[in-house]
Image 1 (cartoon, one colour):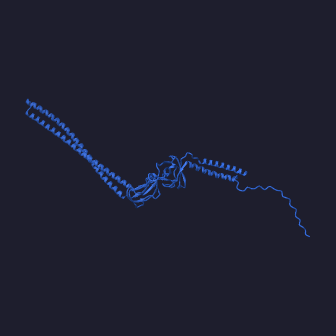
Image 2 (image 1 turned 180 degrees about the horizontal axis):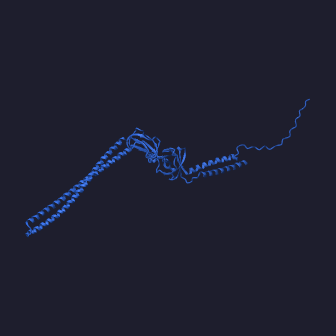
Image 3 (image 1 turned 135 degrees about the vertical axis):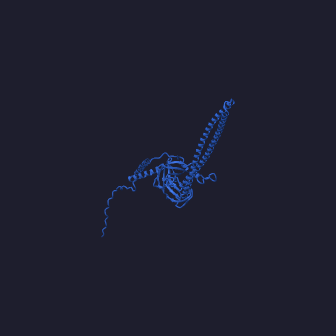
Amino acid sequence: MSETPTNPPAAPPATPTAPPPEKKSGFNFNSPLFLVPAAIVLAVLLYLGLGYLAVVLTHESTDDAFIAGHVVSIAPRIAGQVVNVHVLDNQMVHSNDLLVEIDPADDAVAVAQKQAAAASQDANFRTVVAAYELMQSKVNTAEVSARKAVADAAASAATATNAQANFQRSQDLTKDNTISKQEFDAAQAANDSAQANFKSAQENVEEENSKVDEAKKQLDAVFAEKDMALSQLNEAQTNVAAAQLTLSYTKIFAPCDGRVTRKAVETGDYLQAAQQIMSIVPPEVWVVANFKESQLKKMQPGQHVDVEIDALGGRIFSGKLDSVQAGSGAAFSLLPPENATGNFVKVVQRVPVKILFDEPLPADKVLGPGMSVEPSVQVGSFAPSDWLVALVAIGLAIMAVFAFKFFAGDEDKK
């Protein structure tokens, strides 16, 4: 007979136990590993944002700006063939450096001809001066002879007067038969001779005075000839100076310090007068920024400018606003707009503003007209320093982190 299986005794019921605490999944936002980097990142973002906001509120900028400078055009003053060129493209030159030489042969011959003509005129002038001095001596001699003739005439006059008186006394004595006929005739002869000598002396005075007048007229004529000869000599010397000046034009020198650009001359070229052969760009440059007319409200000379130069990798240089052009760029263009005819559409105009650099530019870098820059003009008085913006950003970041931690703690408690 089969045995019926017996069921094992039932296990006693287990006592209920509390479930283990459920572990929170995800990142702990209260951990310093999150809060510290978050504060740093937030501080950096606030620093950049506050700095950008300050710049936007207190600065006006434009990317329509370029470096400008003087461009000196070099051209010969005379025509001729080039015999030597002493510079290369983009070479730095200094004032009075020799740039180009033109064949001086023709001009040297012209100088020699003018010098020979001047020497001839100088000899002619010396001859005329000698003649003038000779005539001056003749005038002096004639004046001396005239004075001697006047003296002789005075002596003859005295002799004639005495002879006339003796003759009159002889006449009176003859009436009384006091003197003989022979004595009377002698007195009469002496009187006649004295009167004739006196008349001859007077005529000699007139003759000598006439010689003086003639000598003076000849002196005046020679003096006029001397003036003409002097004028001709001066003209000849001026021609020599002009020829030497033209000869000096065969050498073209640099008028200023700068860099050679647009060189268009080679040895053997035949140049015409005023033909541009190269340009020199001096190192002194400035910035011309074309701001919108709506940006000019607060701009005035003397304001600080930060100039970012593209050619130097965005390096920023300090400058100042120098002046604002009296008129838009379109008004001074080759074909200015005619707004008085047809349909009108308002377009915001741009006005050139001149900006000067406050600090020297790098000497080892080439900066010239036309290169792009981005100026930023400080038009507002509020310009916080970097450290102040950094402190404000750090403070705001810390406040934001503590606020976040506070709200995150409240969420955990719930």
